[in-house]
Length: 382
Image (cartoon, rainbow, N blue to C red):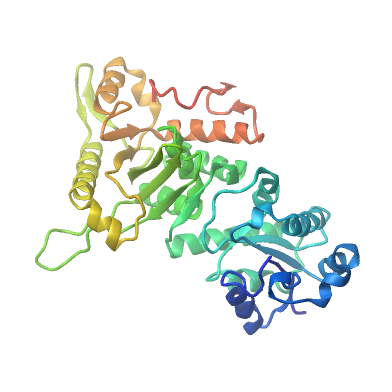
């Protein structure tokens, strides 16, 4: 059995859709498409597309993929195709429902968000592998979906790449899995590996600074200073992130430490930063100082649009450590709202994620605290 794929695009001959379609056909998939745009010639499919043609094409298909390009979200034509496929996916008539967004467009009309939130992202580089994974599967739809999700995550772990950040694409499953890792005091490498597969978990960090409402990006393991023999050691932060709001673009450099690591050592008033926290803060200061000195060259060499001096974030530890008033006061003094480097606990990230899930209608209570969700911006105790 050969997988039949329907590609929905308002310009099947355009630079976004055409190479993608050719790649799938070259790898043996049967591909059917939207009609050719009237701007590029007449297509016989238009004769009865909305009456019977679209329904018949979807009935013949196993997988639906819509291609996002400029103007996609304001097209009634694309809305009808995405909506018809969405209903078929919900009723089990389609095996999979994907979104191909090659130019990382983030501004969408609200009417299309429902379809975007249901669609799994797919890329040029992983499409063939992902689709072949479901080609001959006879497993239940839920099992297939879980296998596809894990395929996407594994690709992101093995091949770190720039990803868009959008909290609307968060799911309770990934937040609960992060909570499990935090509660079990997972190692730094284990929790970092999980986040690389679920980059939208980092979207809540942007909202600590009241940004990201207009989108954001994450750059995992971005080399900001390459390692050259005879020169100082190279600089590769865990994550470089950007967030956009109405005032422009802001940048952050993020360093992760395990949830089981302590921020402070010592007792009472005789407290000091732990060795791990001290090393983490010093490393972030190196990143920030280098970015400050070389921001124009980084903007040009790394193609970082609107790049500016980043704020540093050290994500580590648990907030239970801050129940001691001396430690709580020390953390506040070290990284207030306007400090160049800030310390955040894993609990603060989880609480923010719970708030975002509630905003999207997934949950009404914070399982961490067992009470109504608190304002994510109130970070006095985390």
